[in-house]
Length: 304
Image (cartoon, rainbow, N blue to C red; front, side, top):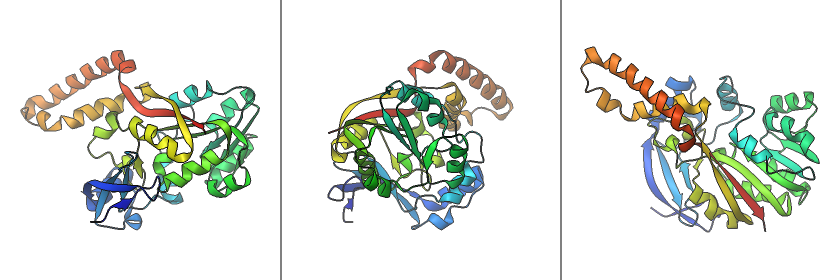
């Protein structure tokens, strides 16, 4: 098989490292999220590749989700949390003299909290309902394509921010370069993505970490190695400690990983053992959460 081009830069090659049967992923989305992803399927196998230059892992074989797909997921209360750890951390990096832009601002949870603390705050989102919600709150938000917007507003902002967006983007290199294009020289590109060096990478059947939801898999290593290829230098990154709203997810991931061992326990004792194990794990996680890597990694680039 000929090497595939990397989505970071076309001249970079990528190697296949794994593949999964698509039928299982279709069934997983149907069973867990009551949605049919068949319209996005391009192959009977979902292939996982790794960019040889940056280490970024990405999927091919299922296309990215569309508006109706995301609208369906957003019906779940857990899907969109307006203020999270990464928002708090990013807000502390902004100053009153900053003109900022948030890519994929959703219904404006972050912008609403920080707009009074910065010089100006603008948001972009492709969801018309979300944009309308932002406008009703008095926020400066546009329904605009990032590529076109960056051509019209080159070097306008001191900081460009994005939270839980870039893992969804197939053409990620051009997307990031468009974001950087909006920055003044020395401006900061601040983004949060799922940390695939954390527990989320080890959960069997974690379908939301696959297409059509997630198109690439970030780690601290790939974030650092990508910076120079989008016109930036790496200033640093922060790892999210496990948050309270993710603790049950984390405990269930441990139980899922050990399900084969649990099944070896006699059935008459299994329920009792399971409940007590879950109670012990919950107590342990509450005490150790600050020492456990959570869902997100927050990266900070500086435009060269």
